[in-house]
Image (cartoon, rainbow, N blue to C red):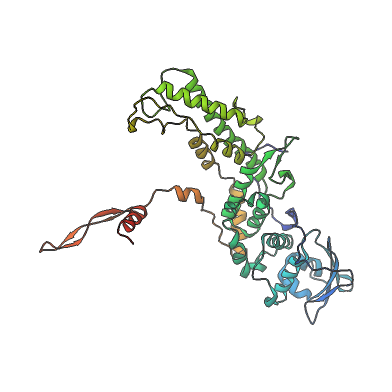
Amino acid sequence: MSTETNTIPQPPKEAEALPLPESPEATDNTPVVTKDTVIVFHDAADVTLNVKGSFGAVEYKVSGMNLATASDVLRAIIFGKDGKNSVTDGIVDLDIGEVELSALETLLRIAHFDFAKVPAEVNLEGLCAVTNLTSKFQSTGLIMPWASHWLRPFAQLHKDDSSAAVNHKAAFIAWELGDAKLLRNMVKSLTMTAKVDDDGDLVNAAGTKLEDLVLPAGILDEITAIRTETIEKILAAIEAALETVSAHTGDVKFCKTGVDADKCETMMFGSAVSQLLSAGLFPVPKAAQYKESIASLVSRIEGVVLQHWEGKNYAPHASHSGCNLKFKENTKAAVKGMADPLKEAHIEHLKKQSAASGVNSHIDDHADDDAEEDAPARRTRVTDTISGTGELLERSRSTSPKSAASSNKNSGS
């Protein structure tokens, strides 16, 4: 597995150069076909598509000109590069491997203007199969009227726990349709959930090696580098805090009160070490030794509950309950500061695909939902205006969504 991280990947120039993603498993919606199945898509069909795959074989009677208009790849197969019909007896052999047959039927419906039978909604597996074929046939623009609607349900997929199992498929869909935000979120999901197997390779939540997944050029190297860097930051912060407290230099760093600071930090240290030991994080391992995922590391740190020193007759304001070793804060900062995995070549490819699919590219949208939730509430200044008779026309105040909500609550609204 390559560990080089500085190479700028180049987007593939031809769809044939794109490896196809893992095909989803067959669903109940997959047509049951046999070698004798024939489906007619056009009354004046002049081409027979002899389609083969894991499902078996099926023949489609289609319009060669319709397919040639829909896809340059199919045009070259049917009519040849010189424009002359290169198909013997009007038969075209097409092997789509593990891809669902229903995905091919969807594209054929569109190519033959049979829009009434194009599905209004598709699940993630179905959309992965469809984009698999649009990539192979260089026909992304064929699904422009449906692409944005089909993609919309997956905009918040990164918030769903199930994303760990399908993030690579959603990443491929985003890559093909040109949605940078979805791609970033899915690559981050992959980075957060990837772990190292017994062979020393990165694997996803399902145990599949990342190098066996279909990912944009260079993304695997970025995931590897970002994962290592993030784990290093998290573990280094824990180690630094423990070393500072155990050194007993008299430099108070973590006690907020300034009262019995040495006792406060010693108690936090003791409770932290016992819990880190149980979590497999003490002695603090090096990043290269940590095999579990970032998500697992974050969860273990979130589970550390520090014990606080409480002296006799302490006034409420002198409580040590607010003191901490900043494990959680530093972990959150490290995750939030993870680098953008998309490089210039990725961005250029996404722009091109977005223009073809009609999907909003979100190229410049780097803010994630957590950052938006953490953002301070916006305040608005309202100025007092007094009439000549002294009547208050307008009151000056600073407002925010929080203060407005509080005001509404107090007023009984």
